[in-house]
Image 1: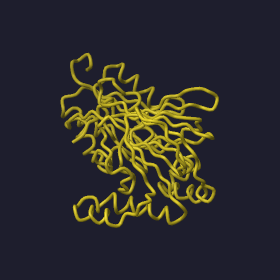
Image 2 (image 1 turned 90 degrees about the vertical axis):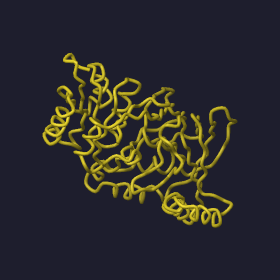
Image 3 (image 1 turned 135 degrees about the horizontal axis):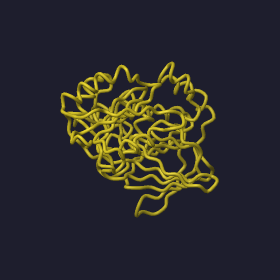
Image 4 (image 1 turned 60 degrees about the horizontal axis):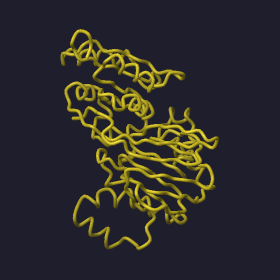
Length: 323
């Protein structure tokens, strides 16, 4: 709360995604209507990330921080606002908008998103935490909001052209997938859920989810709950082309509309084979070690190569404004 005694908001925005001149009149009007003070603006740069700017905003005493940009900006703002007492407001822009989709927030209506920020309710959700062990022995900690992964998904992210993504959106991932998939091979991991024994598996991809819905309405983890203090883990082990077709069927049909009715659930049970291409696990945390270093991705952003990693849920660490 500012010196005037009025609540204040800050906007952390990515100028390659949004335009301040278009947003500011809308936010200023909504803030005034809600009885809030003057909004503070912070522009991200290549050298000053959203996390740093968000921490500066929090230190200034703001009650609310808008994340205006793509999934990477939202993730970085969330890291900066973690456990601060301030709330996160989403003004999504980009190819994914995944947290907004999972929280049923508007992704194409800026006016509605701003109204929810000032007049909605606050919901405390979990923040995924990835502790990355680099090949040089260094350790890094990063947050994620929706999903992290290793395997084909991370390899695709590492090979996706940022310039192409800005031009054609999600089709850039298709371009990267065409280049990555022919050489993709299963790899061996050892993983340990909290309080459980160590297991070994050969996987094509392993995903760690705070939420379950991906772009296009694909339900990767249909039982994931964003505020249960747990991560949902999807282990993908397809065999050949038919295995990938089975995964697509499961995500598009079984995890989607079939699960929404009792008849659909009975049909899934009757037609599912004994050998599943996707296995689901759940834990507050999981430690993964690798035979060979692998790329890792967090919320669709490539985070380099790791020798091992721990993923965990920081329960209720993030306050978000919702309907």
